[in-house]
Image 1 (tube, helix red, strand yellow):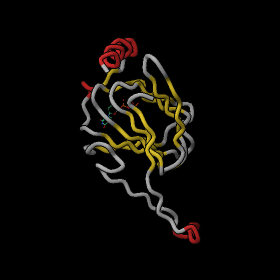
Image 2 (cartoon, rainbow, N blue to C red):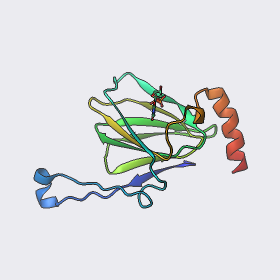
Image 3 (cartoon, helix red, strand yellow):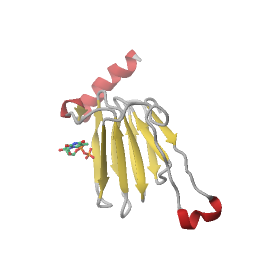
Image 4 (cartoon, rainbow, N blue to C red):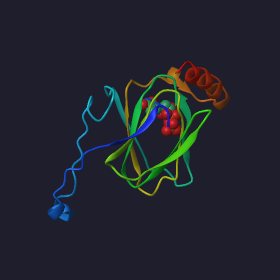
Length: 143
Ligand code: TYD
């Protein structure tokens, strides 16, 4: 889907001793992550009934990684929508500008790590869907 993509990270593990040593996944800016990371936050302890997000960003780029458990992410533009299930710490969902997102179906102990391209700025948020739809139509028309 436009302005989004699924990114695969390395899984360093010795298959013969996986049960013992587990996995190691490295992430480097400029390699797996297509922007400089200026902020990191994580979401956890979310009730299974809860739905978070309900916003878009004007400029911000993010990569969402579910480190444990699972969560579903609805990504949406005025023209298309998709639900991506994150349940693998070697996968990251890149979400670029002007994508509406909602996070739901958090499993017990789900931990969602987010890497962001900029510091927190409430002015970059669009939290009203009607305003989002109007601005996104213009944004994607200009290409
Ligand atoms: P918000 O982004 O609305 O969370 P979600 O979309 O997951 O429901 O943020 C919730 C609150 O946390 C809001 O008051 C802003 C604050 N916040 C920060 O102070 N810094 C941050 O980096 C983020 C992401 C949120």
